[in-house]
Image 1 (cartoon, rainbow, N blue to C red):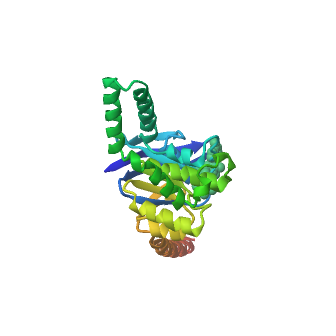
Image 2: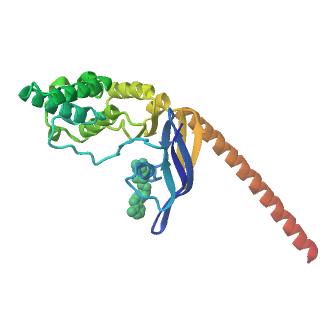
Image 3: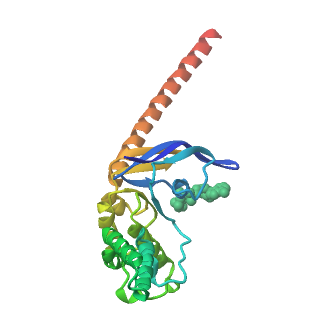
Length: 282
Ligand SMILES: Nc1ncnc2c1ncn2[C@@H]1O[C@H](COP(=O)(O)OP(=O)(O)OP(=O)(O)O)[C@@H](O)[C@H]1O
Ligand SMILES: [Mg+2]
């Protein structure tokens, strides 16, 4: 199923074309590595897909009710809640439902004879059960643990965590939210090897689509099934992982060099013919 469609997308800054005429579709289940040199526009492209940045040309169409989760490359800062509460708030629906259920139970405790409150509590409990609300805390603990947090960290305030750990908090919220599309901008930058391996396993089991910017070739090799390369203002797609893309790139460069050699030879030959003609016509 097609989740995202980019139609003739372009970003032009005053005096500079970042990229132009980009057409691209992202499907459910795809795991794509977005690569390109520094400044090629990878972060800008991800920001555009999640709506944080307006393109100057073209449009982006999302399939109905598609949810997109975005991990920015930098600038993440959580404040004011405990680590566990912050991660828990990433779960879709459950935190709100939990609040409603707590309120209904409290009201029922005050007025045990109320049939309306009894019915409401029953409905909310059923919904909570359907959404696996009783497993929610265990899920949060598993994701936080996978991303390298210790149980002793759970009650600590998010204010206490440094930049790399702030990124892990954002990542844990995104994974718990379980959106249709995950856009991850350099997620492994601040991660140790054990956490990278855990994340790789988690994302491989993820059923939505993943678009991943990473300079970690081993991670890309283990994770992605397709490479999207931003180069010279254009997006090109290559099936396979990073090593396959790189091998193909060498082949393409050799082919290009051979083409260039052929052009140079023809140009030289043409020059000789022209000179011979000029000599003859004198
Ligand atoms: N408002 C702007 N005006 C002009 N240039 C801009 C503006 N905003 C961003 N840029 C430039 O656009 C380019 C693309 O930046 P972007 O961060 O998307 O690249 P990137 O591929 O993610 O790079 P990196 O690998 O370093 O993260 C950069 O060279 C940046 O300086
Ligand atoms: Mg970037």
